[in-house]
Image (cartoon, rainbow, N blue to C red; front, side, top):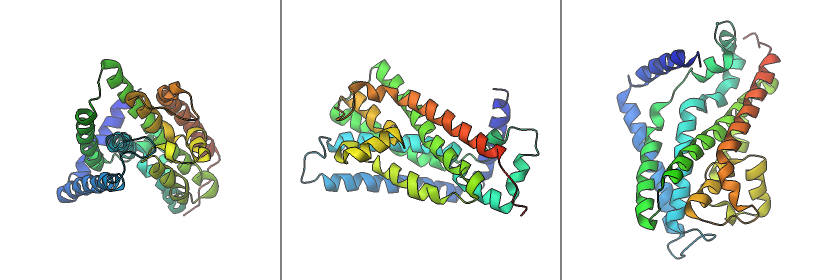
Length: 265
């Protein structure tokens, strides 16, 4: 908690630096909105001749996508640069995080705050409002609180995965490839309801790379959908899974840091 004032100062400096290039900033926002709108259009085309996919209608799949997008937007704002930790290790610039009187994990986390993810927030809010009106979701107080806690859980799960990938660099030196091999495909899987995938894939996204708790399982709670192979209450575990998974990732990162040896670059 004592680091919070310092964190906001570092974030403020980073935001001011990004706003120096305002044209690029706004173009990135537009680009993100356009990209995710394209994904939504693809879903509509897929379901043009069918009423549902795995029992999920177009609007329910839109809700699933919006929940994934908003949590990913929050995640990359804070954690996305972790996947490039290996670059700092190879170049020898990671050493500077060890000689300053600040906790290394906190220092590296606060090094960058990507406000370009605003485009993802705009897309998600618009879709949430659209879907809520289209299928008449009853937004009671507990559902709103559950949605917010689910987003936090999703951020911690995806952020924890980025932290784990970065931690591997302490042992392997180069680790960013793990993002493209493990995390990127897992994220793409969660854009669609897990019920359409084989049981093995569903188990992997529930117990190994728990991305099913980012949007699929919580969405079944809010939308009243069934979860084959899993108990009905599993969606409520998303915040808890996020906290536990992130603590595990943090422990792995600190364990790797204790074995870190400078490359001497």
